Length: 490
Image 1: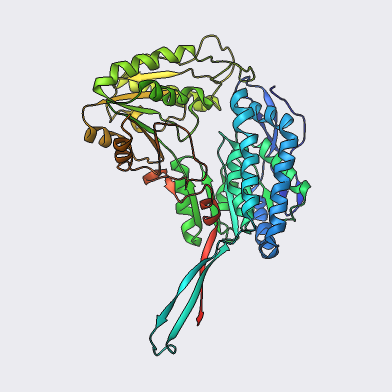
Image 2: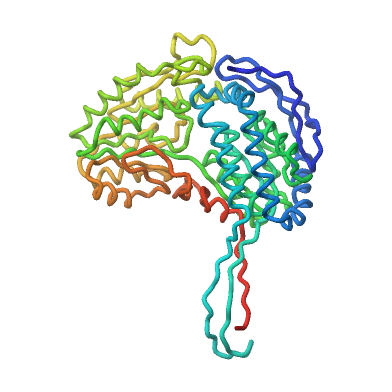
């Protein structure tokens, strides 16, 4: 199912396909270390040109009837559905996602997002206000003043997406932005931009006007940095590391850029003494079996009541060796590679740090011997951890679970809340009232109660250093708008 392409990929700027000013760069298959294809290397000038094209296209796109915007978004969904057979192998080759994740969670979810926002494009987001009686002032006569809050598109949005779900994450940004009347510049992650360029091609083919969608790709940070400072960009929508998110926030301050920043996570799975251990293990093992832990919502910290600690560690240690690590194109593979050699080395350094700080590496997944090529880390379990240990505090973004014991509820909550992150946490207890009460005390933007399942209509985003803003469902429409208050005498 993996794919190698000799296709020439180009940038889309103002409706024109152009070569990168700095040539192209190879995109590496993380499972085989072979070249998948070559991505164009944009210059800073090209990034600015894309922003300017989106700026110029915005007034007309804003005035485009919502029904037409909806039609185009649905056309993208329909075309993606037709193209699944060739897009899924490309995504698997670029990302290293397993066949299960690639076929079920990449293109199909992107289709769902385009369809969801196509349905919403023609729906009014205005908020009517009740008439308000006002006394006469030196400014104006008194009377009954009516009003409405109108949501206007924010303008040009630079959409910068991560490597784990390149098409899905980009779809979650551009579909609602386009639905409300924004124009966009797409900047996919440098590791796997080819499928996102394919998405841009589809959007161009179905008839999006010139400049409404643009795409620039680069292995260097400067073109993306240009989008965060350009006066032609009104908003930056970024998913990625907290460190980069901080730089984007700083860069956008000079032009008061609106920002949606979905950043790092260090998900706590708080396992109380009355938890269903099998249910907790089922969720926690997703760190290993779902895209090799390369997901910011993963329950990577198992914070377990001491009375259930040994039971949980034994159960996890039993599961890990039975998760097949290997070729992601094989249907029974559950753990594929991580995205790059740099990321593999980074993950291994966190495992080493835990051991050096006194934790027990119960299951060690470093350099699985049966995989001669590729950037693999097998499921790893680190137990007997203290809350202050490096692998407990830092986002690893790989198939590594750390286990921390606690003695009472207050201590468990303190440990769960004791990192700089607050994106997605979990509570496991068979007492639903207690689980709900505990969940409400977690400093996290999202909490799963006895489940690792998502609700895609819920607002998604983080507390603390996990980001700013919310998307998902209708909140994905709201975040790409500005509120304008209109008032008049009754």
